[in-house]
Structures are given as C-alpha cells and as structure tokens.
Length: 237
Image (cartoon, rainbow, N blue to C red):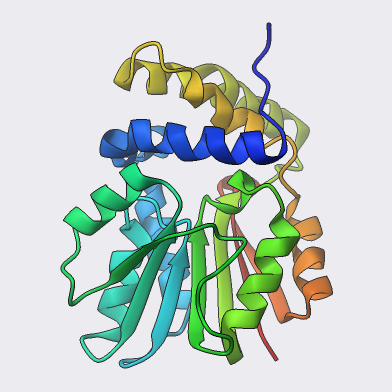
C-alpha cells in the first residue's frame, strides 16, 4: 500500500510526534539530501529579511533552530528573536544549540501565534508551511503579527516546470530520499512523508497568489535547483 498522509488534526498529531523522533539527526538528514545546500538557502533567506541590529523577528516551525540562530546573529544582542515549533524534540535540539541571550523558544502551533499584533520586523519559516493543516490560517496570523513594512520569507519545496528535470527530481525525492532517511533511522516510515507532502503543496505562483490574497505586497520568489526549492518573499504594507 502506498504511503498516505493523515488528514486534519490527525496530520498535526502525526507530524508533531514524528518530528520529535527524528530531531537529533534531522540536520544530518538535510545535509545529506541537499548536499549541504540547505545552509546556503537559509543564509540567503536571512539576508533577504533585511534585519538590522535591534530588530525583532520570529522563526516559525523553527525545527532545530538553524534559521533561528542566523536571525539572532543578524539582530545582535539588542535584538529579539523567537523560535516557535510544536515538536518537543525539535525544540530541545534548538534550545541546546542557542543560549538564552540569543533566542527564546515557544512550543505552539504556527496557525495560532501567541505573539501580539504588529510586533515583528520579520517572520521566517523553513520547510514548514507544507506541514500545516491550513496554510491560509498561518499566513493570516503572520500578517497580523508583522509590523507595517515587516517581511515574511518562506523556504520550501517548489515545482519544476521542465518535464525531464521534473521526473529526475521526482525519482530522487521519492526513491532516494526515503532510503537515506531509513538508513539514518532504520524502519522509520516518516521519511516517506517528505516527498508525499510535496504533492499537495502549492506551486510558486499559487503560493504567491495566496500571499497577495492575504494582503501582502511586493510578493516575489527565488527559485533554486531549477525550481525544486524556492524562497517566497512578501511585505506587509
């Protein structure tokens, strides 16, 4: 039987528990499947956020805190950085690699941000939107929490338009990536989730349209690896 992603609340519970299982070697998994390129993409994302010393920013679905750490360096000691994730295991890893002075971490759902409105200069998310039950709800919350002029940036999977290249990426993502995950965590089926979660995730243009429908302006995106990975950028007017 082919792998099937649970629906609704069952998906939230499934993703939350499984990310805790793989948290301690999740960065190793990312290093292998992207040949280390995820670190470049994250650095590019933080640079595009345009943060200054003393700014406030939030990294939702922060995972192991890889992007969160970069945000902390961008705003300096006078800044304020919050990492948010609903996986206990991921937050433990993130907290272990960051000092209390660098970032604070909150366990919460990205669709209900426990942050006051108009308070953040930037909000980022790395490979997290596709794990949510409702992307639109999250975007509405992000819009609420950002200051006027604040920036939202999302790093995630994209859609490849060139047919032969699309099939090559599909083979790699569906046949090779799960095997790498199961090599790191034998018998763990969660690694089949990653490629399957890309099937219903919005295309570059569709997500850009969703951002505009939410109220964001100056929406644009940057493709990497022929569109298989993408960073979306949007501003709150």
